[in-house]
Length: 164
Image 1 (cartoon, rainbow, N blue to C red):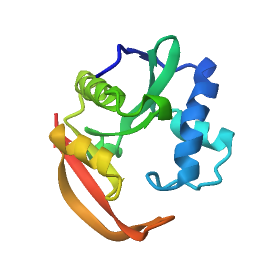
Image 2 (image 1 turned 135 degrees about the vertical axis):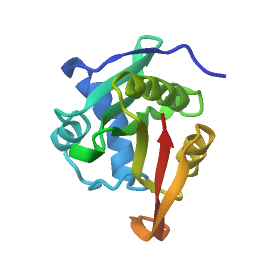
Image 3 (image 1 turned 90 degrees about the vertical axis):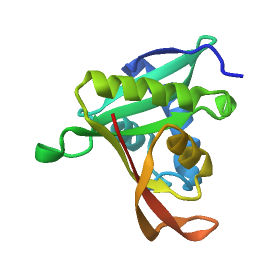
Image 4 (image 1 turned 180 degrees about the vertical axis):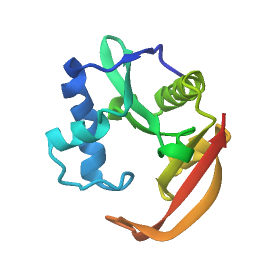
């Protein structure tokens, strides 16, 4: 059952909450192509880069998820956006990722983006792949063995795309 969520733009006051969500995901090394030993400062600089619009989602007074939205490329590709998502471990399976995706798609439309593209979805991340597919994303490319999974070895990475 989905939990009631309140989205708001992230602020520096959210850095501890962001790090508490990013750290286990980045340390696991099985969903993001990020150095598993990334520092707190490096992770926050990555997630909250100046070109990114960052949102947090709250439930019961605490942050349970975050996403960023940014142009996927510049110039002739600036009409396509990219996004990244992270959910607190205790909030997984409660509709947080879907709510963040819906919000991100609405924000992308309101900012004038024509499409959203995920450049590097680890194929073994079946929860994310399933969510993106249910939301209308198509796999438009497969990068064979492009991700070195810490347990499974070489895993495909997918390029997923959806018009807005």
